[in-house]
Image (cartoon, rainbow, N blue to C red; front, side, top):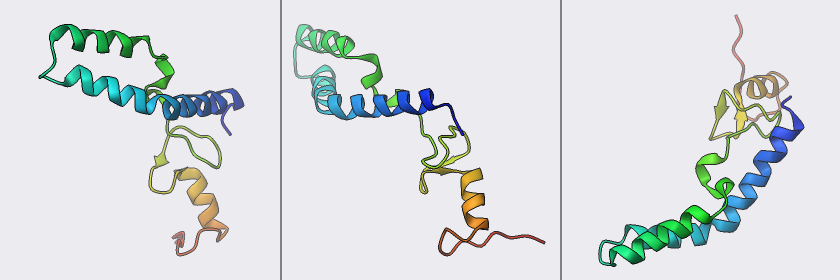
Length: 101
């Protein structure tokens, strides 16, 4: 089990990303638009830099929804390899059979 503080910090980051997603996308579109003047694009970049650092999507860490483990994460299942193995062994995941020989 991961530290509670790390899990909560990641949840706060996810909320910030969701809150600022529209504004961030709008400012990025302005900053990348070649048709606008250089000053307008630069102002958009300055405003983008003023947004909270944790509102950037790249700062969110993929974590297992069961244990909070940050490594060995399967995106499709939203869980770590260890949690997947444990749930598969107990028969909690339909269609998954853990091989053993």
